[in-house]
Length: 186
Image (cartoon, rainbow, N blue to C red; front, side, top):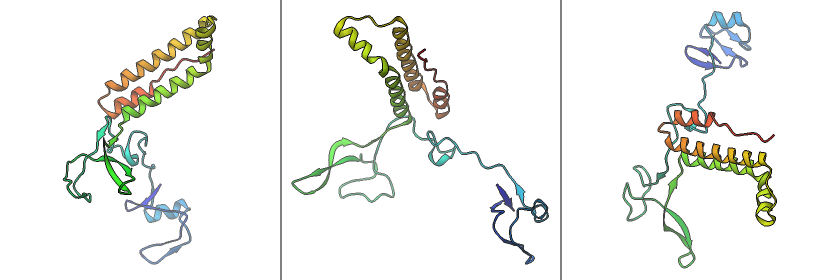
């Protein structure tokens, strides 16, 4: 990224200097240097899985959030700031959307990542599920290496779920997610 006086500048576009000199582009390093254009590293974007808009100072919520009406929102009749928001459902009698008795919940990162871990475990176990069914239905033994593999998958899933629950910061959660150690089936 190139900047001039702290502002980003596109070196491939034409440019008119304050003294009126026109440049078709700013690709020449000597011209850039004479104008005071400097190259800076692009800003590092935070991981969007954990932060809003890639901003490291704007983490997503770790825990589930029960939604409530807040200041600045258009409030329905009879609703005050701080009142719970409810999931809306179709009412055929009034032919309109009405509040249900289920409060709206925005799922937090812990919920999302525990579901992802469970999905990964399920995906890893699925190719050998037929052996478990065969064992149950026809008493055919499951190979020892498969039993060991399945136990390792379940153990890693449980370890990750416990570690995710124990996180108190987004940084801790990122470390847990980065330390996944799923077994491989040989």
